[in-house]
Image (cartoon, rainbow, N blue to C red):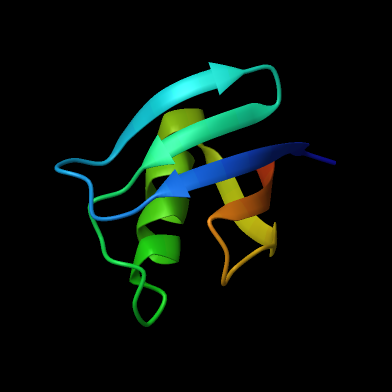
Length: 74
């Protein structure tokens, strides 16, 4: 079983970056706009690289506040 994080996403940022991490809460700025799942895909790609793990959005796919699951790669 992986680790769950609550994530607040800021879209249309100048670059995709981790702004803040406080315990199990992350604030991430993504460059992509919140259209057609672009921001979600960019968030998953960024967090996958950041944690070197598989990432899945559990809740909040249409919201700025999300719950994600981070599983170690096997």
